Length: 289
Image (cartoon, rainbow, N blue to C red; front, side, top):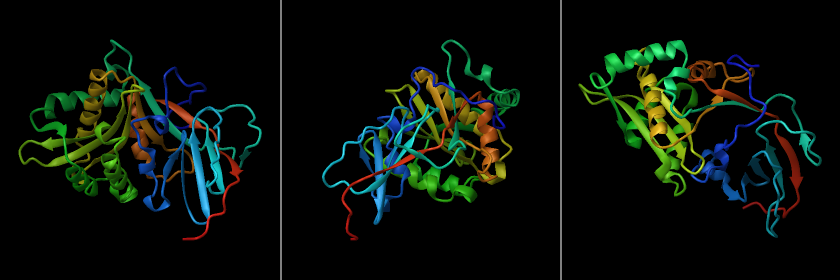
């Protein structure tokens, strides 16, 4: 058990990791200079002399070697534990990462499952801010980037999310499923908080990609307003699973704790990914270029 609650031992029916969504281009999360590309249900990347191939799925990956495949290390990241996996090596016994997701129940107001403090700030947002001081609406990448650089997250995450969001918007797989929202101040038109989500109609899922709020207004309930907007969007578009991404666990940077505590207010269930498994796949020894 981690600080937020117990993790699940079995995935609910219909749950699909975002690495397997047809609408989420997972190669955008890897460095371009590593030349990431899809290989079957996994991704391959690397630079001379090291190459890797990763699969995030419950079923053991089936490798289909091609004549010019490089020699590489294959990584299998299961979602929940299985029994012994013959032919694979495990180097750790600690969970690889902790993620959270929530399920929207038909006919139930989503805020009913939120924490008491989240519901209190939601009331404040709806009665004192929404439509009078701020409006939530789609924004441009440039508006997102300017706000993000002035936000509380940028100090820790630096350029990573800026690069990934830009790549998602440039990807044929993801561009039409990537949504940028901002809380716009009505008196001066300034964006003071943002939320980026990537949705998957085929799996009835949506992913919390990035969010930020400007440092000088961190006490305003703008992030609660954006979460309210995301949940309402999910209900309207038939989305069942809201994926919150990573949560802090022992050994992670302490700066993650605050972000994780915020996301824990929206009734997530937790997945403790088991340690990754590794094996070596033979192939061509590529020459340095």
